[in-house]
Image (cartoon, rainbow, N blue to C red; front, top):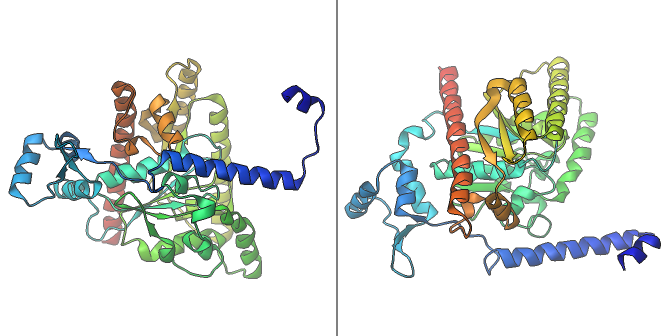
Amino acid sequence: MIAKTLNNPQKIQISDIVEQAERAGQMVSQIRSRLLAPDTIKRPPVFSIPQLANLCGIDKGQVSYRIGKGDLPSGHMNEKGSRREFSLHDVRVWVQHYRAANQRPEGGRAVTIAVGNFKGGVSKTTTAMVLAQGLSLRGHKVLAVDADPQGSLTTLFGIMPDTEVTEDQTIAPLVHGETTSIRSAIQSTYWPGVDLVAASSSLFSAEFVLPSRQLKDPAFQFWDVLNLGFEDIRDDYDIIIIDTPPSLSYVTINAFMAADALIVPLPPNALDFASSAQFWSLFSDLASNLVESAGITKTFDFIHVLLARVDSADLASDVVRSWIIATYGEKVLPVEIPKTAVTSSSSAEFGTVYDINRYDGSMKTYARARDAYDRVNDLIEVSIRNSWTSQLNEGI
């Protein structure tokens, strides 16, 4: 049958593509209904006493003592009555109590982080998601903004971009000039501590709307739309994380110009390394032109390059790793995200390592993946705290 099709190719009509799109959408919906909860709503994980103690930086005995004292959430016994479990909401209360010194200081505002790379398949969206989840587990209130018309980050939150997202729930009203604040687009998610501005394919229109507005109004600054849209919510969140499109688009430019910091996931292989060189070249040219033509200034508190999808069995990755370190120096985070069965499995199930309540495979493999992401979040949190310190010093 396949050989016959290849030998006698049929012309493909637009109607065929429409049917193909419908079949693809139906398949995604079927997969989603099988992999997510029966009511198609994702559920946050629950936590044991040892896990809670680890997140709070205390020993298990201290957890038992505080449960007895009754001044922090006491959790609940599981269905079997064999162990005490804590909801994510409970955990955040505990963590905010024990890690009070690490929380946003009075007078500090949200630190905005754009996760970007002009190449797909480099773990950009996964990185944005695990940052949102991991930082919320450290007690922070996070706003995740999906600026990619493909809506992959939105999908990780258990929301189907083209069937469950209205244009008003995206950054589109900002782009079209229908509002000056992102607030009305924000929705809560299954993960306490993380809110979302979703995305859908309607965002592709931004690439026509923004330059059109610029042509009609020379005073309009197309690159500043997101930045201004965040202004009145920066006191409501500790961190804003933007997942950007895998291209130098008008939306990507907006995300970078709104950001206080950039995180660039980069697998250690030759093609991705070459793509990253183009990433920096194009962005530097653009930024330089904006600075020169518009007379604006732009600084970043930090830029981190994250080695992602690292295959320990790939000998060539050692060579590329040396190129990356030689090129980006101290910008390279001293931790690598391994390519493991855990990350592949969780991605296939519209989730991350933080969504896993119980892993059926090797616990050693799971621990390696989870520990890597935990270390990344620890390092990013340090950079965020430094940003808050800078904010306060600049305000004096």
